[in-house]
Amino acid sequence: MLPVKALTFDVFGTVVDWRRSVAREAAAALDPLGFSLNWNAFALAWRARYQPAMERVRSGGRGFVKLDVLHRENLLEVLEQFGVAGLPDAAIDDLNRAWHRLDPWPDVLPGMARLRAAYPLAALSNGNVALIVNMARRAGIRWDAILGAEVARAYKPMPEAYHSAADMLGLAPAEVALVAAHNDDLKAAAAAGLRTIFVARRTEMADEGQTKDLEAWDGADLAAECFEELADRMGCP
Image (tube, rainbow, N blue to C red; front, side):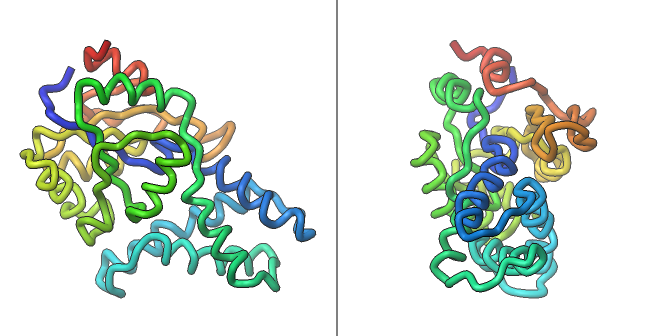
């Protein structure tokens, strides 16, 4: 059990299974139009543009824009890469909202219900507020607050994203923990003064053969296999 007063959560990969969800949404949108693609590869290619797009904002190369904007720009590149042409703007916009329709991992809803009985739970995501709200309402995820990049006007792993979350919760950084499946995120949170909890998502990037974030880094304050085990570790009934 950690001496913290609130839990914040990375969302993509930690709370929701973006890869399978995006692959499903892309297939539903494009297969009826005659495009038979490797949908898993499509999802991975779209996600591969995520960090480079945010880095242009983090580095000052462009002003802050919402993740929905970056996702749509990246989608246009991925559609071209996979030879998908001729889609109307409305169809592109709807496919871009695939990120609003991601499914939670099976342990998330029961685990969060237990955790929420003892702690405020906040999204600390690079996703924009509307994206996280729509995702939460569809999936039944109950947040007490939606924080992160759009609120801070800074994309993780910039320290402002983590400091803003603690400040918005009225807490010192050390009173807040970040729950994440990505060690780079946890290391940045720790450098910003937050406590850190690793939850394993060993099939986030691939059904087999994932090579990164299989185990917690040595500096993590706590590690668990799933949200329900985390609730056990945090003493939640």
